[in-house]
Length: 151
Length: 488
Image 1 (cartoon, one colour):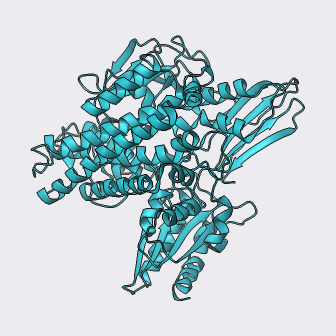
Image 2 (cartoon, chains in turn yellow, green):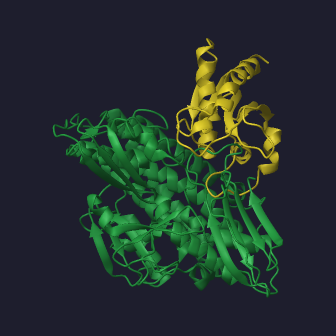
Image 3 (cartoon, one colour):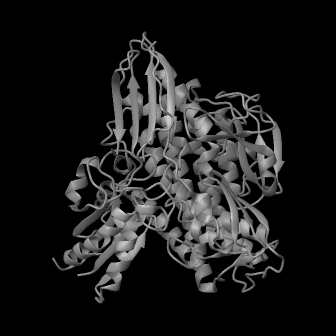
């Protein structure tokens, strides 16, 4: 099963880079030729390009929710995004729409997509480091991704 | 009317806000506009080697890393007082042209097309790329994906790495291309030119042949008579990579044309008490408030402004499209904000043609890709046209090339004032006493800002991957009348 672990984010924008930090650590702990670990800072159509051709995709990214606490790690599947599928965007299309588009155009879409998201505190200040709360969450996120690869 | 004070220090939690206040009679009293701004870049860059800036600054933006990479590279040329080799210049412009093809394609089909192909009153569930492809056909949908994919291959091959090129150096670039790569680039360029033509045809069939849309494009609600800024080459033709910055007034007269290192003589920033955004304006004309006209220093830097600021396009098919556009719009300059989508397609075709030209240049596979700098670095400015507007990088370093100060004016920053004005005008014209505030109406207000494709919080977004935006309307008593939000 061809698997992609994709860290999404901006590595110079504090907590926005957490997905990339997690992906790096996952790569260090993996020795599986079937698994590719990669990073991207683009979403929408760019994301679609990245995931086409894989059977299973794990995405890791930062998130900000209404009631979440910085450092919480969530595991989500694409059903969790279906509500946002059709909203128009000022900039790019969201994950759910990108997936729908891939299906529409008969691209080789992954059968399984899991998203691990870390609740971020600061995504507007330039820094190569995460905030302490988010930094503490990285080992847990790494563990969840590695488990997700097996399960 | 009830006075409602907005605390300008209020943090926006990462989303953009348009707030509209109504008078007692239901007409618009005032409009405010706030966007999230990324903080602390100047401090972040202090103490870093300037040669790292093409790598660092391209990470600011998940949408146009290539633009920052290129502006930073040119700032390095200036900083180290070195000219790139002829082949390096051409390779840079080749990569940049491929980038423009991908970026303009993405913007038009995701942002511009939905409103026109599906219509501004269409349900949000349909008013997106899925609806567009449903209407124009799967083949064109496939061509959108394919054009982007192929041109990203060019960027990756020429630039040395996917997504983040490791390419620009002071005096040149890091790698040359071989004949096999060149031949494939030429093939992709040919297909991209065809795709550019097809996209213009879509616009023609869907927008221009529809009187209601054309009326909307030409309407006063979406008209703004501001100055126009864009880079031009020696012949005053549009060039994305290099040249001088030219500013042309709403009356069509050239105000100024300056070299990058002169930018501070021409641009100043206005501070307003109700927002932490700073609004650039033309020094020579002066700040007269959020008004248009040739006596106001407000200017626009968008695809339409670039075409307005130039005397034409440097490639034949794009020139033809340019002439057709202006003849339909009634001459130059065109002050119709919605025509920005059309200008973007003219630019898409130009970028593809330019890519083809450069891929056939006899020097393009030469190994002579670098002039090693010998002078001491001190200060450098690099300007390119980012898809969203003129992008300026300015570095001051010590004699070892370590950054002491840096200033960036990104594409959208140029447009803060006109963006705000476009939204305000649309709100004032469309929200009238007795008129029901529908989704379609609010969408039309958003249509006033989509042509700018604003680069706000311009980095990768948190899931679900879009900029959250909120439009809230308050009545004269301060009660919330309506709220439209996306991605929140």
